[in-house]
Structure formats: structure tokens, C-alpha cells
Image 1 (cartoon, rainbow, N blue to C red):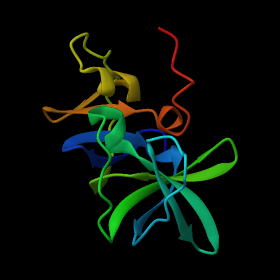
Image 2: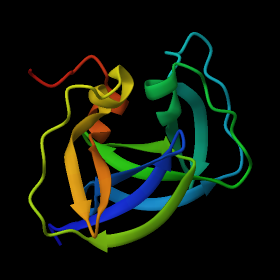
Image 3: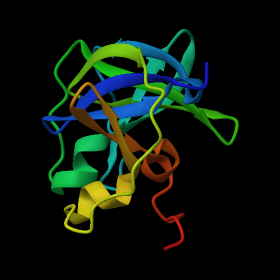
Image 4: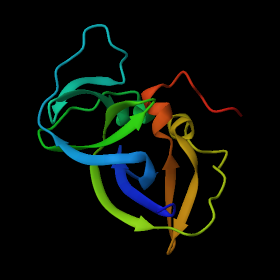
Length: 144
């Protein structure tokens, strides 16, 4: 469904991710560090006999790594034929939002403006629509 969004929390802020971009939501018990990996990579974790890279979403907006708490949720996305886990604070709901997207405000802090594509509004609440592609490969910044 094109108007369906997963609502999650990253660094204490509520965000939306298009549901068609999501394979599943899982709880991560532990991850194994990857030596010399980029700072936004938490490590590797096992999911149904597969090994996935765990991406620290908080790092993109605060510059500080998140501390993995056993059972913390990760949103599994498929990008370029590979699955990745996006580590988030919490997953709240899946909701339909049929209103048109709004442009990002110019005063949005740098980390949020990098991962955000636009804003969504529903019943007076605003959600940042985030781009999972950027969090997996931040060198592919969107054109300005």
C-alpha cells in the first residue's frame, strides 16, 4: 500500500518510513563489531540463518553511537539486493497517511536534513519521512 508508513523513533524523534521499503521489524539481541568499519555501522547480527549489517540511525543525527540494548528494534530494509538492519529506539505503529508531502524546512539540523526527504502531517502531528538508502550508503547524498 503506497500510503502506508511505519512510524519509528530515532534519537528521540518520531519519523516515518514508507512500508514498501521494509522487509520486517526484528529485535536485535546482540551484534558483533566489525573492525575498521564506518562509525555508523554497529556491527553484524544474525537473522534467520543470515548475517545482516546493523546500521546505527542515531549516529547520523547526533554523531554519537547508540548503545545496543538487547531486544532493541531494527527495521530490515532491502537495498541493492542486500538486507540491512536499521537500529532505532522504538517502533510505534504502521499508519496510512494520504496527505501530500511537505518540503523540508531550511532550519532543520544537519543530521536530520541528510536522512530526511520530506515531511508528512497527520492529525496535527508531523513526521520526518526518512530515506533508508542514505543510511546504508551515505555517500549517495540526494541532489540539492
